[in-house]
Length: 399
Ligand SMILES: *[C@@H]1O[C@H](CO)[C@@H](O)[C@H](O)[C@H]1NC(C)=O
Ligand SMILES: *[C@@H]1O[C@H](CO)[C@@H](O)[C@H](O)[C@H]1NC(C)=O
Ligand SMILES: *[C@@H]1O[C@H](CO)[C@@H](O)[C@H](O)[C@H]1NC(C)=O
Ligand SMILES: *[C@@H]1O[C@H](CO)[C@@H](O)[C@H](O)[C@H]1NC(C)=O
Ligand SMILES: *[C@@H]1O[C@H](CO)[C@@H](O)[C@H](O)[C@H]1NC(C)=O
Image (spheres, rainbow, N blue to C red):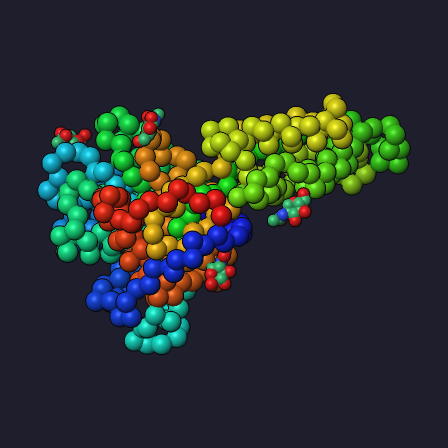
């Protein structure tokens, strides 16, 4: 998940979450695979080692694999699908990312051994998102062993770079478009606490530049402090309503970086701040532009001349399909690769682990969460293959 942020609120259908049977037959296989991939650090930019491991492992499991190299890079996405496949296209893409945020924390286990559902597995990536890598892989292998999926149904896609700029998913999306092999359904794995997400907030990155005039600090009126005007504006921005909706809550602003001035006794002529904004307005394509306009208004209200606003990147709320029986549902406040996969496919967002533990030094997951996610992914894949067979669809609920 890109950037830690709190989940908002729960809206349940009243259905119980998918639970794994008490000791699934695949427990050892799942845990040893998960351990192997967590033990390979794979901080964004350094994914080839874990990618090579995944290619070898998935090949050994009988899947066809492809290293999908990013342009002029040694970094690659891992693609894998059951053989044989009649076409070059898989209808369902089951995907997550194999990069993790820094710093690396090694794998450890606490609680009952041999493991039970309560055993806790700690380490970087155990949840975000190698918990999803492991659960998605086991779900596909289990369905394949049961004869429930075939070559053209499903493809595993583990991308690089999600935690930084999404270059892996952007490349995958471009290649699918070029080859004419876009999927009908994409199931994205991120820690959703094993709820099926109905959507997540949008995001926008903005830089605010404040221009002042230098002068001697003893004579404040002789200049104009860029730091001061920027501080006044940012406080107002934080307190402002930049856009809210019933389902997605408030648009929130993180002032992540600030810089300004040259010396304590010089009135600062220039200052800037970089903001990460979580957008609560839709639509996906341009909901963020409304927020940008409101942000501009706040800046202008503080000082009509001092500010330049640049928002190089943004999108509105991302809606996902949560219309599947048997899952609790929720709304996420973080960003994902979902908007980077272009096309007109049905999108799901689901995965094991609690986002409040992801990106922390205490990142962890329980064996029970991993196992219940294997069952959850199986259910989603089967639903995607045969939507007609599942219970009568409900209209997507907005709580
Ligand atoms: C995830 O679930 C746990 C256990 O039910 C809960 O304590 C935690 O607050 C949940 N996390 C979020 C982000 O809702
Ligand atoms: C699948 O794609 C590869 C690479 O683009 C190409 O070489 C191959 O001919 C394609 N096969 C089919 C069945 O379309
Ligand atoms: C949203 O912002 C308003 C103030 O603009 C505040 O009263 C409210 O508590 C906020 N809601 C949440 C969920 O943080
Ligand atoms: C903000 O100013 C600092 C100091 O001049 C500079 O290093 C930084 O790159 C600036 N940030 C942006 C986003 O331009
Ligand atoms: C997307 O798919 C839906 C239903 O499958 C269809 O109604 C709609 O026209 C499609 N939109 C585009 C842009 O292809």
